[in-house]
Amino acid sequence: MRKAQEIVSNLPANSPSLIKVMQPSHVNRGASVRLLAEFCHKHLPEEDSMIELEDENGEVDTTKYLAYKNTFSAGWAAFASKHDLVEGDVLVFVLLKPTKFKVYIVRTSRSEGVDGALDMGKKPVYTNNRSTSGKSAFKTVHDSDLSSDDNYVLDESKNGSDEDFGFDIPDGIRMSSESTVDFRQVKSFADFDIIVNGLVINSELSKQLQHKYYELCSSQKLFLHERILDGLNCKLIVGVISQTINIADAIRASELGTQQKEEFVTWESTLSAFEKLGMNVEFILTRLRRLMGLCGNVNRLKRLKTERAEVGEKVKALEALLEKWARRTKMIDEEIERLELNDVVDVQARYRELAKSPW
Image (cartoon, rainbow, N blue to C red; front, side, top):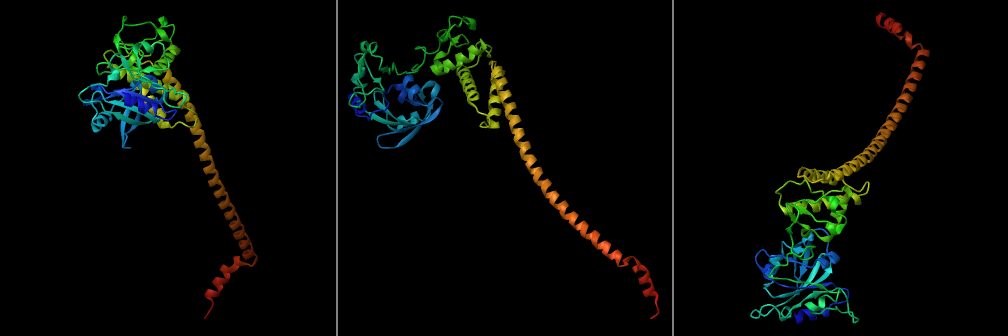
């Protein structure tokens, strides 16, 4: 752990970093690793993204970052295997950009187990503050220090599981004391619990998404999921709620003329599917369809203006052709008049007379 601290202390100023001690769930087959929620909310994308992990040799691997769980999932197990990570190894994640980390690996003694800094009640911490020298203000602290120092955020892993990091309820999904709650009982965000099948699933959504969902529910004075079909998987319901929030945000952020018709169609079909599952999204669908109607009118106006311009060009071409034909008609009339003046009309009699005359 001392080596990891030295790495962090020598980082340039304004380099957010995070120390993570590997647990069995981080290095076993099918491993994943969850990061501090505070760190993720400050520095990482709000949407699921591919994150680059660059090791000390400059080799880059990628892993899927699940934003709502603050977790590296697909690709992490391959990274752990490639770098021969074992329980007790200490990793220093240095953020280079929102989708890229430099990763320093401090190997634990294979015979000693976890670094001694994790013993005796000590825990690694992450900070984004800097000392007066411009280096990272990193320290290892005891449990008793944490309550008096709000600048540090605890990165705590217990029994190989970090499943609950960054979520509102430390114990993750829990049983609800009530099977249903009347939304009228919710007076503030502090009273807001998302209950599905008798389980409180707040912990499956980031605090930011919880706030947004609370605002959506408050706007309708009901829980949007209160009539969702019984027996659906909690992860599926979390996905439905998350996607509903994302679509609602996208609708409110949309601008006339910038949205593609395909996006609207996708949003509409997605919300319609959620509605069939029992999700109360009718008010979002109504807003979306009204916006689609407005966009349809604008697009129709554009098409009509384009068509009018095309027809105008054809009219001009026809007018030019008519003018040409009019000039030709006039020339023909003049020629007819000239020939008539020269007794061309008597030519038939003269022709007959000449034809019948003796040789």
